[in-house]
Length: 105
Image (tube, rainbow, N blue to C red):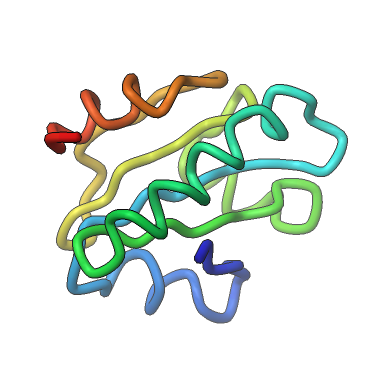
């Protein structure tokens, strides 16, 4: 499951999470985002409890995107203990995302 994030819950869902978080910055009109989303949905199911995946709609929450300097879509920022530890842009395969996260598939 991907958790929808907004201004009111960003800090709790992303920055204060007990597990690493993939913050998926996306928009409905973004074709590459639609390519990446099923990959993230699959990983959210397979890695439940190990990682949390959150989605932030940049059209609705431009301020959150600006705060984290999101300049391209899709952008995924990996947070751990409230800190950015990695980021990537564009659609990726499941294997690419797994390698970025150092998960064994």
